[in-house]
Length: 89
Image (cartoon, rainbow, N blue to C red; front, side):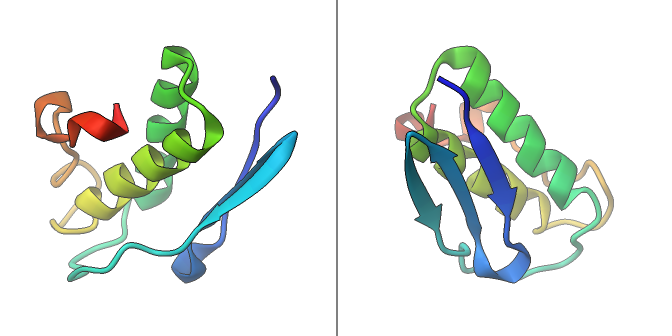
């Protein structure tokens, strides 16, 4: 099923796949947003490759992007797979 995700910056994200869903922003201290969009897309692509439903893909993508924002630079803060909550994978 085709999925059309959209980032809403500080308002969260949304996706449409037959039925649409929306996820609000995650809360936490933001150190640096460099690379957050790429981290978000990486989370979406991982979810797509794993066959996750759109709601879980959004949750995973938001969590990966939020984790990235906790550290300075484009790559620091990116979580390893073992550090991601199992219910998001």
